[in-house]
Image 1: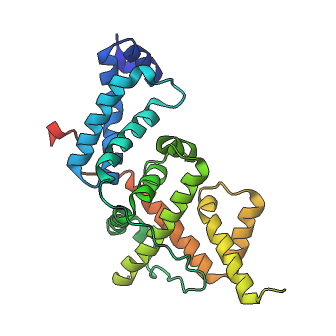
Image 2: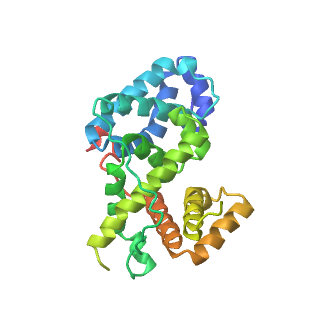
Image 3: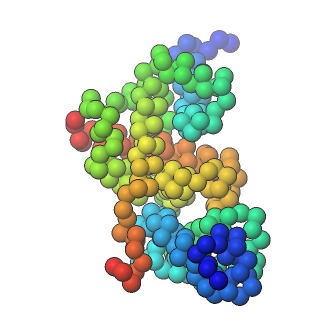
Amino acid sequence: MAHRTLDDAGLVALAQSGDRHAFDQLAERHATRLRRVLYRITRNCEDAYDAVQEALMRAWLNIGRFEGRSQFSTWLTRIGINEAYRGLRAAPEQPLELSDGVGEQIPAWGAGPEEVFESREFLQAVDRALAELPLDYRTAVTLRDVEGLSTAEAAEVLGIGERALKSRVHRGRLALRARLDDYFRETPS
Amino acid sequence: MTLHPMRRHHERCREVRAQMSDYLDGELAGPAAAGVERHTRWCPNCRRMLTNLGRTLGGLRALRDQPTPVDRPPSET
């Protein structure tokens, strides 16, 4: 059977009947993206690799329970994030301290051209700021903004409501914006 | 009791900032989106906040295409 030509739903159906090659094809299709997501959450290569391996094993063992109400990739990402969180939750989580900044002077980000905001330096500053966000906010922003999941998909992955997801993403973005103020204060254009 | 104009202004800043993510995501209904645009036209702090929040979002979306240390499986590294 030419597994490569099948869509995810077809591969899932075969995997649920015990076809290991069909599951391998699903894994090959989604593992890279899952590794990237879990790396952005854990910020540790080994943790990301381990969480992906564990997630694939759990997905294979539980494929019979997958009912197809969400995309396979959404289901797999949820399992992967649970695995990644298992290691990270041991560390005490820092709360997100965030002033609404109302009544304060909001600084402009230099007088340089708009290309500054596409530069490697700026993207690295964004990535560093993202790495420093508390876990729940980092995960929500990674899924919604970096990976481009819809609000509904990201909420489904995290097992929370859409309002809660939107709130996390908004607060996470505001915190990143505030942290990037520091970058522009230290990097005059 | 009438709110002090500055307090009323700050209340509006707070409301508008709470809507900025939805505005940038295109998920704010017409009248509310128009309200954000009207407020940020004459409030310089909210205008800078919206501009910089938009640039932050642009940077996050651009990260999607940036390489990470785990782009290859462990056996290929």
